[in-house]
Image (cartoon, rainbow, N blue to C red):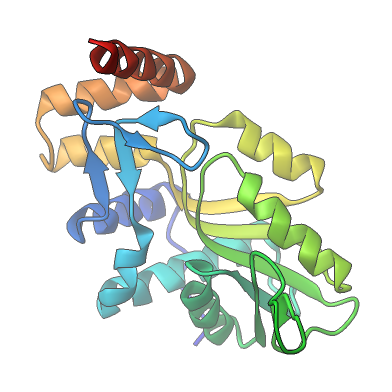
Length: 233
């Protein structure tokens, strides 16, 4: 069912951050940083896949996502919803149900057997497709999905995620260059603010995370240098 209530964006961000914290999707560890797919290190890690195991929370988030994309992109802006392999697939299914739209999903690469398909489901040429993913970091992985969908005839101008890291300006710039607008519910800033308000982490941990958010590249470089020094010793 399409939601009929429209909470303010700030309240959606706060509540989304609270839900991520409640389900244990948020991890902070400055002493042993996490390594991202890009190779950069960070004291932060988020696991949005955990959300699929909490029915009340995921239902609320689907309402928030539906409201956000309708308010920011339009009420009749899409003909189809695409989920990116693999984390985006369940979210795409729920959003398609909420918006009363068909759904497809797109693989990271074409299958090696059978029809060698990269896109599964029915996509008609010219359809306006909403790409649904769980999160975005630097935006690079989204380009593969966007280009595959366009090669198959889709019109894709919007990407919707539960979580946007919000510290990599290149993510927004990269998607804008491709003519795609990014929509999201919460960022690291929202999560840290709510974590402090509700005392989910101690102050020292939150201060360390804030230092990372101010200068992620510098923090990562320092962490890598420290690791190399330790390994060398």
